[in-house]
Image (cartoon, rainbow, N blue to C red; front, side, top):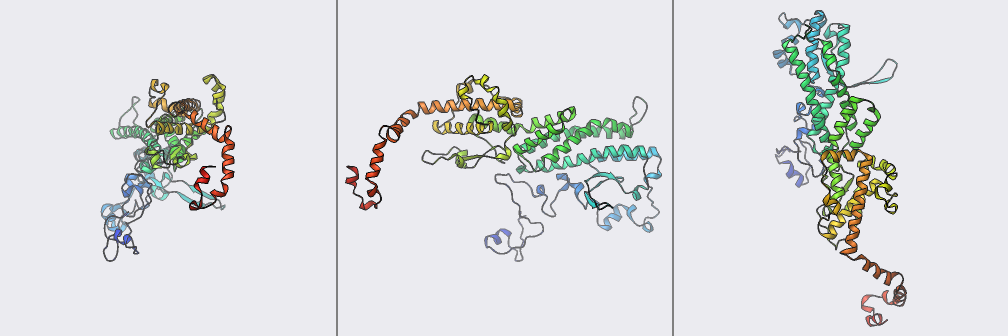
Length: 503
């Protein structure tokens, strides 16, 4: 994106050079970005692609910035005199951590641990980038990015074993928070991630706010030097015990973020449901977190599903729903009767966003379908729930076009609107979703059939076709075409119209 300034040698704006088809050399701060259509404009720093305009603290990626510890040499020496060579430090020496008593080591590390839990580095707890290397045996290894201890030369040796053991168990919590916060901060500002993804980020952000409130309380207790009822101050072991729920929750969120990265819409919902069924069955805490996230992020998809089944319309600006409307006239209801109507030209199924439950629910529904409708001839057992949902929306649109306005059946008029929780529960339950689709399919079929039989009198058209093209007078057209075949092959000025008419 151009910043509006001149970017060429003769001081012409970039847009003028593009219009004149001249070769231009953009500046280092000028980049071109491919943005999805119908996407609202976002600031350049959201995409973190243009050099010099990145705002790593807004996007949550400041710990991944390689230059976060570097400053100009003169500024570093003025602000941090302890970093000068020993000959220039004026008697200032650095006391290493292992030289302190164990209780003071605990206080220093506890202070840095609370900061690391909020994604802040310290002197002895640092954030290390991902490392890829080889062992002495020649095997490749990958060290993921995360918090760890500073170098032994900086610490001065090995720490107390009990402190080191507790910190080793606590540092994954800090690393997971950094990764989760970076994903949430980056996706919330990018509209092309989709409504479902941003709703998931909002749900994760609620849990992060609760976590930060817990960390802020720990920091308050640490600063105030609060003494517990047993007469002991806040210790490393107490922080570890009180952090157990947060450690488990953040581990679940990290796995959710790793699974959701690069996905949106129905594909994201399928990935989260598979993650829950594979890893968190029987895990009370993990199931609780996953259920909360699914309930929140499935709400936009559930609204699209209900709108498609009830009205044949969807509002899906970021292509997240299983049905994609490919023609603007179809979306805005501007189709006329003179236009050829091919459903494949108006809408199509996006297989990557079809819920897996729409394929699985057909087998579960077959055993209960007869008891619901009572008429085996209407079972339509050869259709999957996916095909029924697609056909139901097409029927609703056909009713709208034929009637020049929405038609609601008696069952729809008496039916109250579902709440958000009911819509989400229906979407996440394969059996309830299949029943809802089946009911909407038969309701739309009945409504369309009554419209064709009543207002448009389709039986008269069928009788006409039967009479002249099939049985009664079908031979008349066959004999007519055989007799005029030679005349029809001629050019129009050479055809004897009287002969054709009197045949």
